[in-house]
Image (tube, rainbow, N blue to C red):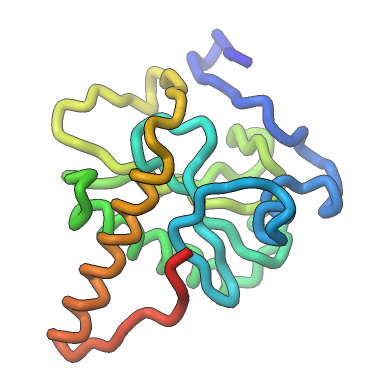
Length: 176
C-alpha cells in the first residue's frame, strides 16, 4: 500500500498485531516458511527480505518472538545490532561491493513496522544508488536470491578469516 501523505510504501505482509502463531518471522525461524537465510545462531536468524529495496536487503530477527522493542530484552537487542553490524561489514567485503549500509528498525505501527516481530533491516548502499528514505522507495523483486545470499555468506567468511588473522576470534554461529 502506498501512503501518499508521507510518500512511503507500506508493505502488506503479516498484519500488525497478530499473535505469535500467525507471525511469518516465527514460521521462518521454525523452518515452516521459506526464506533465503544468510546467517543463523542460537538467538538470531538473518534472511533476505522478500521485497528488497536494494540487492542484499537483509532482515535480522530474534528467534524468540518480540512484537516491539518494549518486548525485547536489552541484551538480545544488543546481539541483534551486533549481527546487523557484522552483516553490513560482510556486504562491503562481498561481491555486492557495498560502499556503506543503512541499519534501520521500524518500531511500532507509527514507525511503519509491518510485521509484528522485531527486525533490523540491513540495506547495502552504493555511491550514486539514488535510494532515498525521505522520498520513499520502490520495492524490487529479488534478483538471484541464492547468489545474493551466497555473496553475503562469503563476506561473513572473509570477516571470520580476518578476525582469525587479527587474533580477534570468530563470531559464534553458523552460516545458513
